Image (cartoon, rainbow, N blue to C red; front, side, top):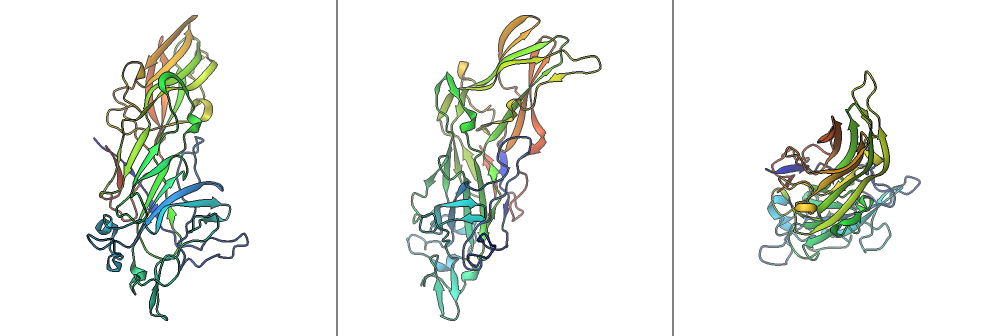
Length: 398
């Protein structure tokens, strides 16, 4: 069984990056510029629902392929679609380009500095009878077909610390990108405390076969799964929760491969082991009063979701055994007796990336029943890419 996470794309033909007064810095007909990426996220969590000033994302960009068997650029192939030229293209438009979000839009420096100095689209200067390259200067590789060149862009967030470009190794090496996302946590036993706030809300996006002119705008897809918790007391007696934790050996990395018709996610053998503390204190849930069926905690407890890697078939955020199996641990008092129990993944629950779930700890009679539900039935993303063909652009988890 495979899981798909569609990457939704959009190309907005709007005004360029602006100064504070609204005057365009560069003509969007000449410069490659970006709007702040879009994303959708349920307002019920503290996960990012927008990139803000100070955030930055990375971009890998392609256009002109090499001639087969050489490292000589082939202008005639620049008008080809991505699926035709992806194995021959070097990412010489952008290679890990940092794009910063500001109060006035997105900025980047083609020289690698902090100034707003964007690259140019390839273009043909009819008056001069010559082509212009990515730096705006004369370029003999650019033909009169420049306005029909097709570009493909790959974006990842955050720019620092979470993603690495596995291949191509350099901007002049050919081939579609492979990215590696790595969780920041580390630990080799379940007693290691883990801090979920260290985990970034990792996202990726793709824009295939764009043409020159207008600003580019990515619609980001979330790479991780959100997991929140709540406790419901359906019993006839009071319930006191002392501690809730999530422990085990968790997936640490995702390999993201854009080299085929579908974008494949695979999971290396690396793991991190430890315990996330969901609640630690004293939570009293009295028996429901007459006319009510349940008393409940806040949902999610603590107001936040933990972000985890998921998507592997028959997995539950990790595949450890024994004490390293991913478990929900509950320390509670019921009818004057204090107990500590744990629960593993129900057989019917296979978490999917890009979805937020609530782990419901339902106390019925004198025991807990663990149930996972999708928050409000909502996913972070849903839809197809702008070509309307879900056979060539959905992310496949396998």
